Image 1 (cartoon, rainbow, N blue to C red):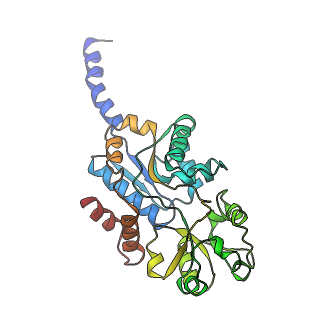
Image 2: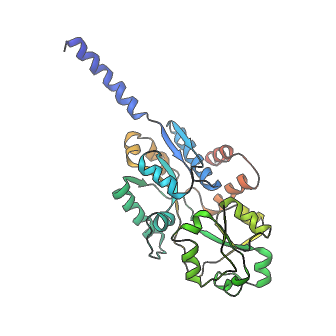
Length: 288
């Protein structure tokens, strides 16, 4: 090869290397408001760090997002530690220590899926077993165990994923000895709250940080037998993306501990109750 050609190749190498590093990061979310909102917060945070983002919101449930991450079709999305532990890994141990669950999924995702759990965002979004406020007050109940005598008269309704998950309907009812009037109605998670408020069902499993709970006068019954594991929210990202984009890791780490449960409920309410646009709510949060 002539010297001039060699120099031309060498001159092109830094540019090619920079081009490889400037890859687009695909940010996804599940198909419910909180996940979409968190995905948008992650996307805007990355863009603020100079990262080019491709948004892939409302992809589907847990298994769809996880498989997309594993297959390389998705680079980062916010997952919940208890969901990863119970639903994806199908681990039936009843662990109640948040750090223990977080360490387990972090280790396995690193070893098996070549992915990294970044710092938890700061809140635990556990399943909320909900009844209408007037029913809870009329019956004088505050815990799930106190539902046992009422269950035979109740018509439950759950999201599709809760019915299928190992930490969902079957295991939950068995743990508490609940026998309902009939099989649960299944519907999109976002529809369960209004179905409960409107009397179409008598009990649902929602998200504890949902802004509609207070708005619709619903009451969350205490999980007094501690059936559900901790569900800490945290971005999960492919290791290859962290290696190729040096700005991604610090940007995600900066979100650690910044969203407590009260803040998440406020953000969810802004979208689901006040009808504000997700990008606007995310942008306002990041500014403050």
